Length: 120
Image (cartoon, rainbow, N blue to C red):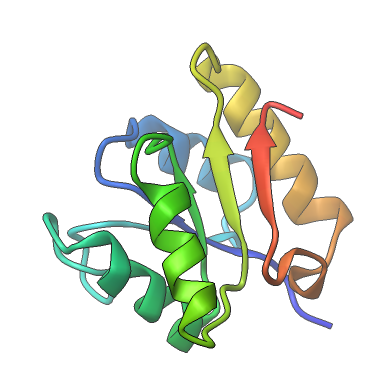
């Protein structure tokens, strides 16, 4: 079993990453545009392929286009390690708390091909 690894969408507050790392420095969390992460502006289908190759779970607030891209990704025979889609009025504190709890209390395999809306 393995731990969750997170990729934060470029439009999310970087404070999510820094606060999660303050809670536990062992959390693997990248922000788009950082070294080893997809570049800023990469198309959603390419991000999904990157996730599939690396095993990171995407945390995003892209509720407008991402669901259609995920459907097309599945229809092409691909999979995702998981996607956490933030609800419209999600507060940053709630997001940090729930990501941390998911990281502590679950295994990465539990989220394969699943889309969760946060906060739960």
